[in-house]
Figure 1 (cartoon, rainbow, N blue to C red):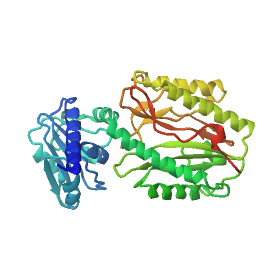
Figure 2 (cartoon, helix red, strand yellow; figure 1 turned 120 degrees about the horizontal axis):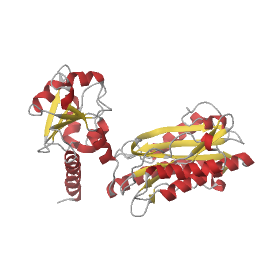
Figure 3 (cartoon, rainbow, N blue to C red; figure 1 turned 90 degrees about the vertical axis):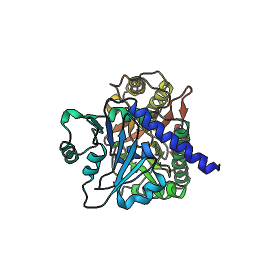
Figure 4 (cartoon, helix red, strand yellow; figure 1 turned 30 degrees about the horizontal axis):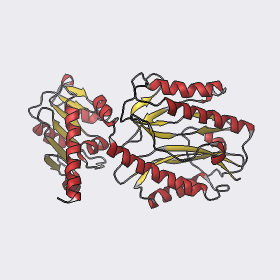
Length: 376
């Protein structure tokens, strides 16, 4: 058997195991999964159906799987999908008729409550009552929140591409370039290094714009005395994503810039130190927020400390102040405290972590104040 065929068998088993893990958690007869990334997670096949219908149908008792898809995607399904049955349909056909026929013995069904549109829910009500339909999104999110060693390696690849592009940027002069020009440079570089797309941004904000946590890169020019906040990530050929932020200081930092930057850096390090299996998730937010509050900038830290990611940019778990769930081996999270002072500027430092017996930090790009200070 060739290495390629061995790999195919290994991946087929991986997707089948994911389906089994899901069905073991459910108390419904069948599952209808329509979110494209979720379909990919359970089948290995990614299709963006746009306005058309895509659905993975799973018999919970037998684990039999069927992929219903637009007929124009048949070749992709043939090449990539790990499913037992193919259910193509042509434009003009009613895909729900196929769903109802295939699941004719199912009295209860599970759907993704946060993804199914109102119109599609109304179609389901033609064949099921509201009581027969349950949301299985929490179970899917729980599964996707846990990664294995193969996932870890692919996520590291995504981070490595991101950091190479950022290193290329700071090895060139940045003063005089606009936010858009820097964003376009990073986009070009990550694709040169093998990314198929960006997962976020690139969000490039300089000067007062850096005080906008989710601003828009525009025509503002980088100048000496500015903070330069860069938040971005990539999507790899295997559809894994990265997400990291570094904030640079252009020219010698002022006393206030240094104070804000070091406050955020201490918060970032406190969050990372706390990120251990068995720790309550809100404890990470508390540890990071405590550092920023001690330095007098608590009112300027306006978001949670981090989130999960993997095949999606924002996945379970959420590291917010209300989440008392505990970190578990396999969780992949960000630690990203920030201080955003309107009219002055902002700082965010974001790293990606893999929770294991020993926590692994994916991101290695320097973040001490000397390393992020760029000649003006």
